[in-house]
Structure formats: C-alpha cells, structure tokens
Image (cartoon, rainbow, N blue to C red):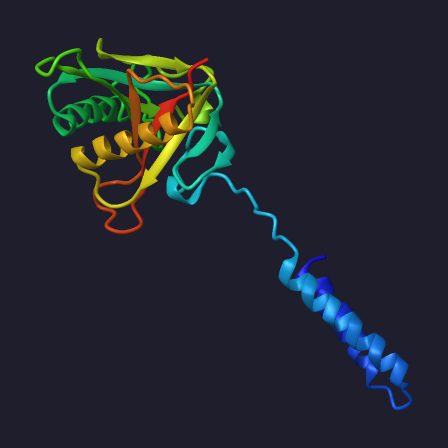
Length: 234
C-alpha cells in the first residue's frame, strides 16, 4: 500500500472518528485502523525504480546492463553484447598508456574515420589490463570507447591502423566502485580487494585480466565515479 493511499484512507478514518455521535466502540476501531496504517507506512518496502542511464554516466550513453545482485563488496552485472572502439597500448605504467590510448580514440570520434563522422562521446572509458608474465614485462592496456547505440549496427571504420571495432559478447561482470581522482595505485588496490572478495566467495572469474572504467572528465571535481570489473568465467 503506497503512502498516498495510506494518507487518504487515514484522513477518511479521522473524519469518521470526529463525527458528533461517534460511539466508544467506533473510536476503538478507529484507533486500531490508524495503528495498522501507521505500521504499514513504516514497514512496507519501497521498490527501487531503475532509471537509464545511471546518474554516474553523466547523461552520456553507456553500455546496458542488468544488476543480478549487490553485496557490500561488489555488484554483479550482466552486460549486453555490444561493440566498442578500441586500441592497444603496451607499457609499464597505467596512466601514460591510457592517456595515449584515449587520444587515439578521441581522434577517431573527432572525425579520423572512413566516414569523417563526428561521433558523440560515451561512457565509460574502459581499459582492459593484462599484466605481463614477469616483473619487467610490459602490460597490455586495451583502451575502449563504447560505440553509441545509433552506430552499433555499423560503426564508422577507423582510419588509423591501430584503432579497431571490438565486439564484446554478453558478459557477467563483478564490479567494485570508488570515487575521487583515481591513480594507478587506486586501480590496483581496488582490483586486489575485489579479487580477494571473489576468492573468498569461491566465485570463478578470469584472473589474468581486469577492466578499469572511468566515467568523468578531468574537469569534473566532485561526484566522480570509477569502477573495476572482473569477468565471470564460464
């Protein structure tokens, strides 16, 4: 029973109770009804409303997902199959590699494609992090922009040889979020904490890579949103 209906019904009961010829028995019934209504108002669950896109997408188009469950340590999401535009940068450090990849993709959406099309910015900037086998091996960073829904069927072909359309299948992601301006240490520590939570829950996931997802421009000072994703293994 929603709050508006409770208010209307309780108002009707109060009017009935205040009639001049109300009897004691009627007054007792009235009190019982009001007590029950008050209890319902407190204990009735409020069902969450799901809006799209989420607020942290900042009114940009985002890949669509459904939430399977949420725990204190992570959120489990199912992402629909979708196309991304990607580039791979190898390096020893996260920030320079992601910055280089971002600029290549930004050039693509600004018209460096076969159609010379200007493509809207989307969110997040997702980066697949695949560490090398040894301490001195380079890490592969696959930096990606989500392809807008209008272009999903036929994305403009990139002009640069090192930029490509990257179709990702439907996938289940385990997501841990945090705020602020993310540094490489923040990404690494969040990934480690998420991996520990998944291991403790004996969940099967791909341990040889993870994704970082940044949703904000560097000019946004507050309400920043960052995520780390591990992908469920079949």
